[in-house]
Length: 234
Image (cartoon, rainbow, N blue to C red):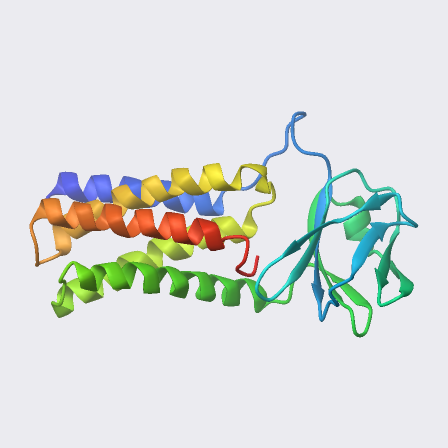
């Protein structure tokens, strides 16, 4: 591998690393304070309001979670949970009341609310999303006829790195309004990185075929993954 090739690959990975670990900065035009509430063991008819009904949370569903998002300013110190014919008030932790963008988890069975997420949740979700992507792109990898052990190892290593970085960004994103736009931009960057890596390191197929594979795999991942983005745990 030439020094120029090493330099280009380093810059691309450095850019992706910076995108993952950069800190959010809020300006005057930012979205108003909000927080996301994950409700465990939620019944189908559940609704949640700030205070005694000052704001109704926007309900979203994934395959495993029921999510509620509050987008307006928060002056109330508690929420009202309506489900199964009853109302229950739950106090909000101070960091949720005074914070800008936060996450919290409510267990409906116990009505216990905790700020943040369990330590295992983000690693588990990253594992599930990366595995889902590897299955999609792995099928296309096999359809292109790649069989060499070296190519399999390169494919897995490159994809684990790029897809893990992508999903860290998705799962730590606080402003979901432009999530799909950001996803498209990041997929383009990942396509460039993977194409370059495949051209340098794969042993099978021509360089043109390797680039076509990278495009096809990432396009399928973007379309199928984009459709499933809001169904998978978030």
